[in-house]
Each structure stands twice: as C-alpha cells, then as structure tokens.
Amino acid sequence: MFFLRKLNDAISVPLLRKYADLIFAMNEPIKDSLIARGVDEKRILITNNGVDEIGPPRRNLRSPF
Image (cartoon, rainbow, N blue to C red; front, side):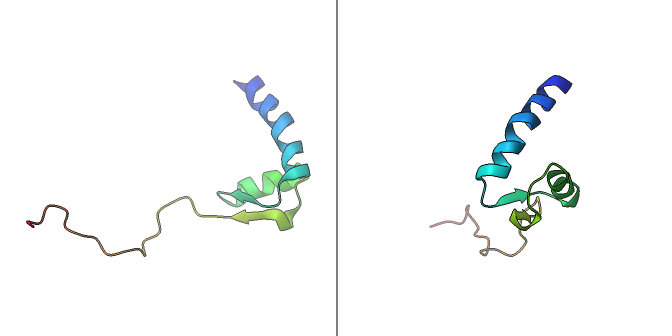
C-alpha cells in the first residue's frame, strides 16, 4: 500500500503543479501537504467536507395526492 501511495504522489502532484488551474483541498493539512510538494498556494481552495445545512425546504414525499 505504501508503494501505491508513493507512486500516486509521484504521478499526480507533478500533474497538479503543471496543469491544474484550481485544486480543492478538504482541509488545511491537505493544503499544507500540497504546498510542501510545490503546488502554488494561490491555486488551492479549501472546501468543507460535508453537507450544507442551508438548502431547499424538505417535502413530505409520502403525503396523499
């Protein structure tokens, strides 16, 4: 498993540095890891891994017609 992770990092991070205009990171440690591997900090956006609590109102799907 360690070998596959190293292989993935060896292939994906150079591709991210070269071709990605914007990279989404799930949290600050992932962002820091990408920056340490040479990805430009300006191209990394942190997104929360979860569901937004604000959304459309719930409907009662079992209501009679």
